[in-house]
Length: 173
Image 1 (cartoon, one colour):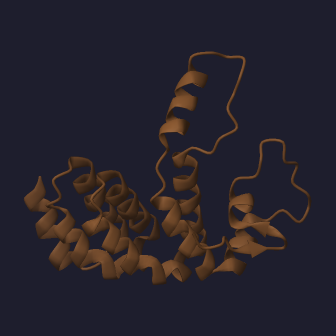
Image 2 (cartoon, helix red, strand yellow; image 1 turned 180 degrees about the vertical axis):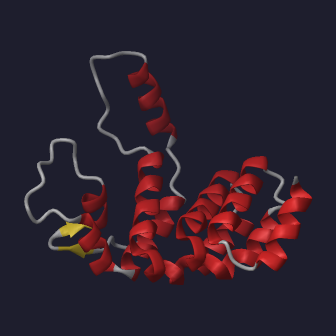
């Protein structure tokens, strides 16, 4: 896949998820690093939203949960999802270029969990994601209840186009 962006010799994932043994120095500032990486960090966050745990990771973690003497040193998909949301949150209005790609995932990805995460990212952006409103209105018809709920929450967070949104939300109740 594409190479991860770097800043001051560290990759984006190193800035977002340092090893447990890491001791930050005075220059440790992930927000500054993410802002410096800008759109390159956004591209990585889109990939991270789509990460799913492999069979091996799921089983390794299940095994680890059954005992207390060993903890696997593995990144879970949920770690990558959190990092993606953080990148989008930190970039705020500068994350606007990713809205069309999040909309495409929200509407068309066959995996409900990916649709849900894309909508949650739009939710994180709030009013910055105003261009997503028409698509989110269609997602209110998604077959997955959790996806529909997240779409309604995202529409509330975006808080734009009330003439379109409010009647559709009232019709959902």
